[in-house]
Each structure stands twice: as structure tokens, then as C-alpha cells.
Length: 60
Image (spheres, rainbow, N blue to C red):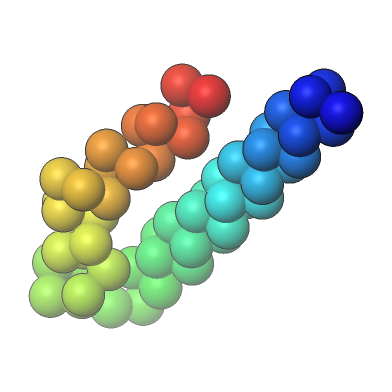
């Protein structure tokens, strides 16, 4: 039962990671067409809590 819970958390983490990567991919694709500097996503990326969240997910 403990193992089941642990793998469930891992699945949730990878799901969040995939969503994060997809979001970043969207930012980069969009940046080809318009300046990234003014976009709200750029502000989100430079947001320390966003970086911290992604760092936590990466470190597992």
C-alpha cells in the first residue's frame, strides 16, 4: 500500500513536469513570432517561485 502511494506521487510529479515542459515549449514557439520580453510568460519564468517549483520537480 505504501509503494502504491509512492508511485502515485511519482506519476503526479511526472505529469506536472510534462505540463511544465509543454508550457515552456509553447513559450519558445510563440517567441519565434513575437518578442519574448513583453510576454507574461517571460515574467512567469523569471518568477522565483516558478523556478523553485520547477527545480523541486526536477530534483524529484
